[in-house]
Image (cartoon, rainbow, N blue to C red; front, side):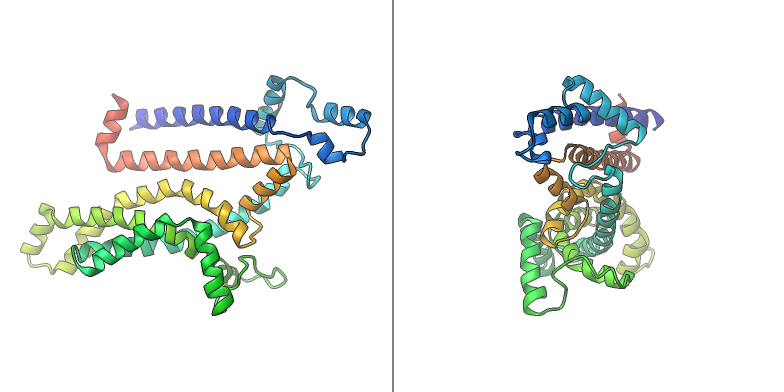
Length: 318
């Protein structure tokens, strides 16, 4: 197991290095002159030259990349052109807000998706099963930002049950008020992720229901419901937990669109502002940290899968 983990960690580090190179090159070849956009077109050529030299844009790309990576290693993410603040001070609060939304979304998505999968498995072949399966897959086809707009129009404008903005009034901070504002964007993400997670849960529960230990438990006198809660769920939900970990990277991507729709000042909204303003230090650091989160959760998912399925671990270590 240790050998497998070391291999996966090494592969993740290599992937992260490749991602960093791609991020740096992609942001470096963006069209337009960042100096003109920052200083204004009325600035003198001498001012442009001084600014480029001051920011290090007059150096070769290899040198610029080395300086950027060195800053990342030491925690110095540079200074944002747009906000005139250290990048860490801009991304820190935004990341914290996105983490709040992601946590609320996962707390909503995980139990509802698992319960949906269990209900479908317990009613295999019946109307409930078909409704949950087909409905979940149909909902997953529609992008999260479309669901966001529909939910805002329906529950924010027509029925006025939820606020149209996910960001509460900070003058009176309250955890319940914050969660209330985050419910609508979380529901939009639920519609997209429910279908896949519930189907995985359904497959695991059906496999467990057909297993020998389930038949033995019933023969010993346990009721079907008792056997399900004592034996089936414990074994069937372990793969589901690993699958939920694999959905976290998708959740990170979904937050970018959702935050824009619900005017939420999180990480995704900050990333979009950096793109529009061509704020290189902020843009590069934001995309790199997004990739870091995705790679870390993918690593966690791989390890969970290996723990739950020794055949995967054996195949990778051979």
